[in-house]
Image 1: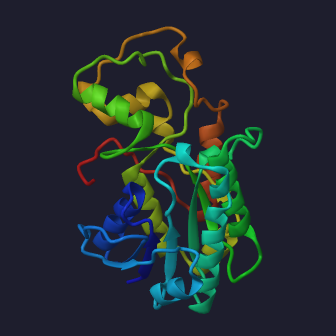
Image 2: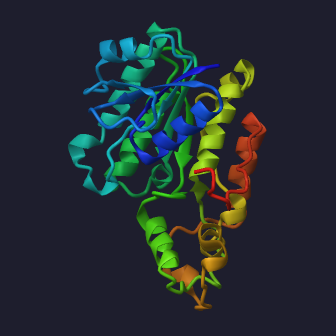
Amino acid sequence: MAIAAITGITGLAGGQVAHALQASGHKVIGISRRLSSNVLKADILTVPDLTDVDALTLAFQKCDIIFHFADRADRKSYSEEDVGAAAEVLNAIRIAATRNGIRRIVAFSSIYADDVSRSNDRYGRSKRAMEAVAMASTPGEPALIFRLPPLYGPGARGAVRYITRAIEKGWPLPFALARTSRRFLSLNALADLCVHLIRLDDDTFKRAEARIFVPVAVQDGSLAALSRAIGGDQVRLLPVPGIDQILGGCVAPGQLERDRDALSQAIGWLAPDSRNFDSL
């Protein structure tokens, strides 16, 4: 049994990962900025300021690994003053981890950090600054970094939520011809990844540190496939020519396979088929 600390445990991703780790027999220590209802039955510690190294040092006692999800809920609300905040938090986490002898830190970034040309994207700049801290040689061990794509599954936000709601209402979607590659990941695949990371041997984890990976589900890598993964037999897809060109989020041909293969070669993980959400 491992003891895992999860920052942002009250969020969608952090909560899903906590549930999966507990189901796999591991203990979870949740780190939250504020008091909240504890539906996970995990130990949740309140740390109002995640740059408070002393408070984090106490919170991380006896932990074996840290999963860092905590961030602002709305990326569109970022101000210029917020850009450096994520980097400050991760620096504090690394110092506190070092004090406790913790050698495994997993930092979750975003694919919005991909586009360095968008200097006006404060959220992307913030994530890139956090990644720079994660890859630095000190203090302690560098982090293993994942740029998360949009997540799908119950409770997902953003465009995935609108697709889900439309399917639930029986509305048709114009995605029958939308087959251009896009990055997506299910919540249960993310949870499976984190369980895999806990089980990973020390040498493999060490080799993957200070590197950036994008976990994806290749089989659900288009709007048509995503819609079927979410809706199953309920989804109604209409053939609308050119819909892929109208909507953003496309990636170059073969990119999903390159994302998948880089992660598989580094840590031996492949996203499971996530078409069944019964376990969520």
